[in-house]
Image 1 (cartoon, rainbow, N blue to C red):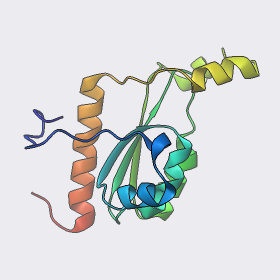
Image 2: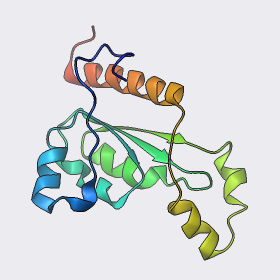
Image 3: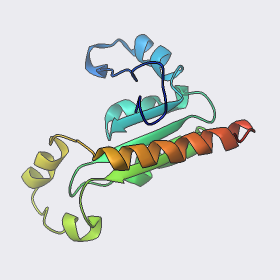
Amino acid sequence: LEDQFDLPYKPPVFLMEDMSFEHQVELFANIDILLTPHSEYLASLPFMPRCGSVIELFPYGYNWNQFFGSLAGISGLNHSFIYLGEDWDVDSQFLQTREQKESVRMSEVCAPAHRVIEAVKIQVHQWHRCCGFIP
């Protein structure tokens, strides 16, 4: 991301598990674009600044984009997602048992760089439009 967007800094990585709720609220209040796996921590989306964006990552067979996507929308945020499978409707048919679904939820989430870069470009454009200026 640093190279693609000519950033003078490395985008920060946060582990929410070790943060107090107060620290999480402060963190979300200072994020313009959030790239994150689907997680309960997204319940803090309403604390993000208006016009902010969230890019949610979903592992193979798991796609609940309407859940936090709806929360993002009513919070004045842009929302997009990257699904790491091929076709969610087809992929999800192979997850029949609770154990299979749980294993997917606990899997590593690593999106291809080109898909992340494209999603961030789109959200930067959305942020500019929402804030009232287009470069």
